[in-house]
Image (cartoon, rainbow, N blue to C red; front, side, top):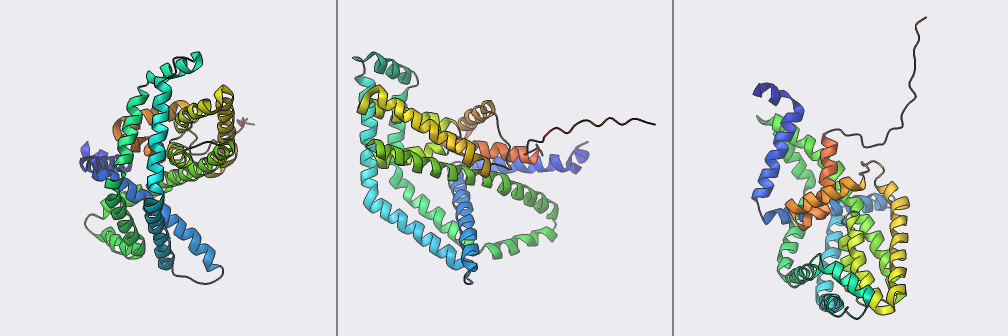
Length: 343
């Protein structure tokens, strides 16, 4: 009975997938590094492909030169951001948090504001803001972690051909069957998980640029802190937009009352409509379109098991599982039923 199960390709793949999941969860804090390493490596590899392909139209260039230049730009950006902008960002995050706390504590004189404050306090918003501050002040501890991820990612991309050539030797080894199954899962993982993450990143950049442009026109303060907040929340499908509306509306209400808050809501709705009807169909055309109910269920469960990471990678993991199960990615149009008559 067990041998018959193991001869089934689907059973073998799910057992191997379960084994990898157990190994990853047993790593504890190392899981953060592995996830970040995959994201950085995937994004940088895609950028390298696009830039190399574009430059090869004009003159030949070695992909390793492009990789080194890309990582030099990233490292320079991190150093510049830490030395010049990080104090301003931290200061703005603290001020923004204090403004939210102040709104919650001093909203008794305004009926509308007191109702909003009571609703937010029911979600223990103060606890979430305090947790956010802890993460902000702990960013310095993450610097060594981020630099290690960048170095590992750089070495991987510089030696990816050698790594592939060495790894492919396992195909003819005594565990060749295991290699074939892992290679199959790896291809599925990159084609589904990786591309959904890539789409989420592009959508997050699109939302952040348009939102910050609108907030700048409206005269919003704390633009540095709000840029980071909107970008990170834009990585969370559907729910991220709703969560980001809370601080944006609170600041708008303090600036110009209910009218400013309504203007901000309308602006976010327009940006979300542009994303939904123009950007999403192009980026997610070959991916399963999840109903909103499924999206929220997946986000709730993934946040429970994976924490903050679950909000970002929960949907890609779910799409990856659908891909393994061969769930149709495209919505097929129903063909008319043909009635055959025997003459």
